[in-house]
Image 1 (cartoon, helix red, strand yellow):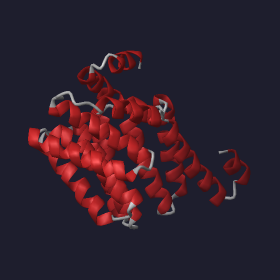
Image 2 (cartoon, one colour; image 1 turned 120 degrees about the vertical axis):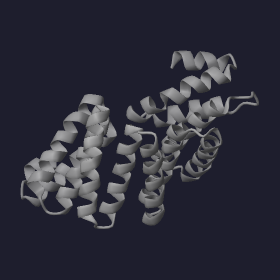
Image 3 (cartoon, helix red, strand yellow; image 1 turned 120 degrees about the horizontal axis):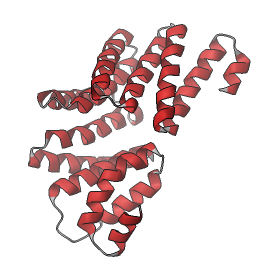
Image 4 (cartoon, one colour; image 1 turned 180 degrees about the horizontal axis):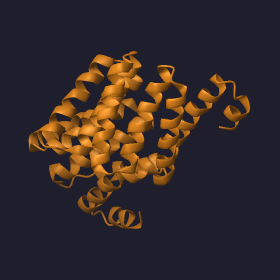
Length: 239
């Protein structure tokens, strides 16, 4: 943060963008969304010629943070420009993030499940072509969520299980937590509250490990609803 502020104060925008683009996952994970978007936006606000790859990565970061801040107009503008730049650069790894962010926007905000599915499938196909394991896992999770939103629980479970296998190969606790979270929600929706609680509890432990407070809150809400549905009102209220 100190280094980024120093680069911005000195008008070294290329270095600022390099650093800010790399910090986007930190701001997302630690819920410093407004700080991150402000820093990235300041770094992007320059007449200096910036390498396309650096600009594209920073724009994807702004798009992600804007989605979490419900600034849907900024999501569209930033992700579309980011994706266009990555396509020009023929950078398949870079294309995945703006596709996924737009997919979540279509799914969670617009409730346009067909658009979300197409975006997820494109991200998945691109990731498979270059064996980008994180991208494969992330795209499978989006597609699993979209299937679950439409009541297609068998498909959602299959996608979630493949997501979990891929996440274990990646070795990222957060990626594994997301896969378990998806599977827990699917099991709960299917009425298997015992399995749902077990998967969500396992997911919660991993979210705690990486400090993902937003996801922890989501899982705790789901666990509370399970407790209430089982008549465990004291436990549900505590969660």
